[in-house]
Image (tube, rainbow, N blue to C red):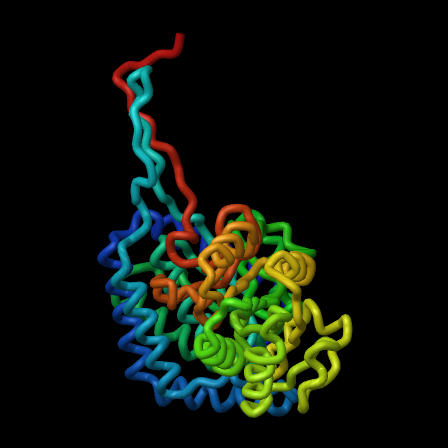
Length: 421
């Protein structure tokens, strides 16, 4: 890794080149973008041995830093995960190009014909931790939406991200698109992050992907607009009318499939009428699966649980830990979620259609689910090929941010000599 004495000059140059590339990309042929992504996917698979070797360097670095098991899991690549990266690139490549899509079309009484049309945002800055696959996902989604992107990966994933970035650049080169369309900040220096947050002349939006510390820093200090979620404090409410078999398989998957992702469930709200039956069976199953259950007073009588404290409500563990408490009814469950949740993803397990309808209607999380694992809170699972993040704000993008969410729009107005009286 090259030493850069002047991070400000480095980032200014990256920003200038990204802006120039964005101008060219805004008018790029859809087939060129598709070809670049297909080629990039092929290069990832062809170079998988080199990418995995780079990942080994990152894993060694992570072990030296004492990363948690969940963070190491986020960092790790293997052939299956690289196959997922390849599949994601190809899926994004085959999606309909969002640029130029007519969102709305109407004619006014004045004779004006008006269209609202999708247009690229311009330059997207992505700041992320640990997960090297974000390099491919973010690069591909931004390209598909006609945006240039500046990627600043975490220090832990430096070698893996560099290897994946090389494949993306080769794809751009093969398709005749500007190589500066996808740039990776070539330094681990944290000053690069601070620079990105103030590059209002060249970056149009920042997307942070990482823990509470990173996202909080970005939201506090950014002068550039931000798409972000601070935490994934995910709840599942288990209603008295839930199906026990559904509860068991959904909750175990939602907690244990991958604990380090933002869609992993962190708190269970169990209707008090089924706490001693369905609830007890579920908690014992979680404990048997290696999950530490921090339970309220009513559930702490179950052998193997740990008494919960106030700090356990509203906690994002990203680990084999879950909080659990009883609630008297749906209203109490929703009150708890509104107080302690993060507007990311929340789920109801019930066979009562009215309970499900109220839960989905009255809560305002970016993603609401009924009888499905919260691990599905992912752009790839929503048919977007991949995502650049889950946005929990209410301006512009919300929920999984795919290619279409990385566009803005403009109005095209046509008249026949129309004048205003």
